[in-house]
Image (cartoon, rainbow, N blue to C red; front, side, top):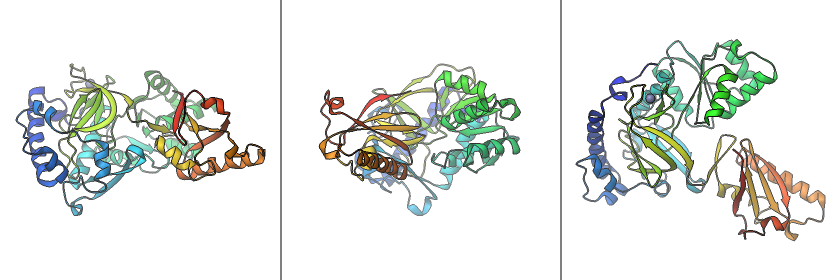
Length: 410
Ligand SMILES: [Zn+2]
């Protein structure tokens, strides 16, 4: 498969490390000059080798919250031409800014992934992110334009409409969420449609899936399946390239990755609007520097679990406190609850008590509907409400509104 930017993607390690060092030194100088938080934290520290990185201060997600909205920007807002919002700890909003150069780089870095998946200007690409909820859609569009593929920037609102588009436009590459890919596979299966009747050659998933699921999708959709791995605050997509060997190479000329106490920490080397020094991603990961058959020299990253209790329901990112927050808008406010997270929705077990007037069945049904409606309106997710007797809560004393997941299905 082709390499979009062989100069940087296959650069010998020694040369790559020299590029990283020069970019890190320039970054530290920029941060000291332009971002007060970093000026205070860095003091008179300077970098003379890559080993000095370990002595520089970490940036925590909480720092981004404190500096919200523009306190981490290294350039005046007039030079920032794109703002993307993402969700940080405790469901707080975070903003990521991009200059024109940042967007060009985003396109180039995403194009590396596309080239690695064999995409060319002859491909027709369908981007399907279920309501545009995934901010990475912007990066995929930039990347597809960079390699001059024909991208369909329209979100099919229904699976039948999506299927019709796949057929009519003779789509060869589908970029989507694992849930949508699975839905598509199920529709083909239940309607006994031959996946080969589509022209799909490659499916690029927005996040990694287990090997077994990848194999199932490969067969069910009769296409190669690649997985993206990104971090919204750093870059998603564009942080890594998944090569034909199924390994995620970090784009190390732009991002300097480290593992600190098991956590992935990344420094953005080239970002102009909002550079981040040693950003703690709250994702467990491992890095490997062995040679890869694809020829890329960037270290490979294997992501693990989230370290901050972030949940994903129906491809929507949530934090546990948001559940309590939604409940607080209903008559169930203050009621202890337990949570069961599934791929497509959540089940909330509310503790039955006198306060929840269990004597009239009708009221419980009304409350059930009220809670389900609030979750659909406020978070866009399906929530099923059940009532649990007090003994379900006896093993642990739950403060009111505390979220305690009691089971997580894969
Ligand atoms: Zn490789």
